[in-house]
Amino acid sequence: MKRPALLVAAVPVVATAVYLLVPGGSDGAAVGGGPAVSASPHAGELAKERAESESAKDDRLVASRPPGLADPAKKELAQQILTSAENSTLRWRETYGVIEDTGDGDGYTAGIVGFCTGTHDLLALVERYTEDHPDNGLARYLPALREVDGTDSHEGLDPGFTDAWRAEAGVPAFRTAQETERDRVYFEPAVRMAKLDGLGTLGQFVYYDAMVTHGPDTGPEGFYGIREQAVRKARTPGGGGAEKAYLEAFLDVRRTVVLARDAGADTSRIDTAQRRFLREGNLELSAPLTWQVYGETFRIP
Image (cartoon, rainbow, N blue to C red; front, side, top):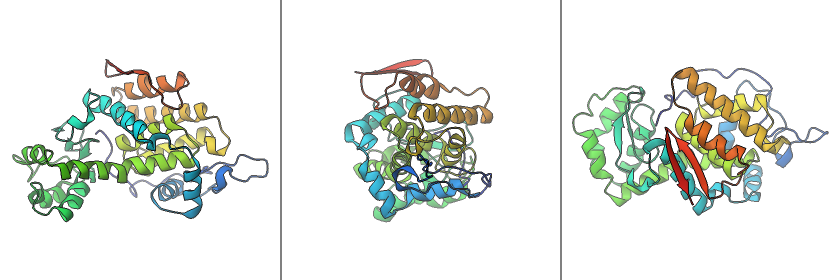
């Protein structure tokens, strides 16, 4: 999937007064029990920590929210929409074995959320899988995967890695490993952060799609950097802001980030999918759904 290489510490986050759960009352108390305002120069890192770690207060807040995207039916729908943008299909279970170099600078892109040889997540997936299944067909490529991590190089991977990936995708344990890593790195932190921000099901999907596409990074092109910029423009619903206004701000920032990297990029997954759902008022992401990505129309009845 097209996303920048991991930049967690590469670019400092600009110091500013940034809301994590923005104050919603006249006394300055944060709605939902979160911190009122963070003036830290590391607001993106703080948000990332909240999304990826456990705290009793945050756990209670998340548990108090409706299931949203974590509902199995909604999670299935979310993966269908995401896959429509990545592989022009709703049949996401047919994409475990997909692998190609799209020429975006991230090396090989593979599997159900586009794990990339150049952005560390594919390496992490294979390392974790090999811990439990040491004799798998991808294990012999681990030294090469470590060498090319952070680059677009195929050195040590060609000519056999793509065939090995497709073969391993036929193993049920590897398909399960892909889903587990998707949830650990992308889905669960995105949904948790969205619930902490008071977002409903559509907002949770907006976060999930951005997390997958841009990576769980705090630099200006990463998910947490995009969220930080959006929070400067509009209050989160958890902080008393209007949900539609906040999501419009988030999508605006994300679109700007995409076009800053590539002025000719297709932003239809934002413009004629997520923003369409938003402007239809479908905050619960309820079927029937119709959207367009890359010139194709998709429907879920």
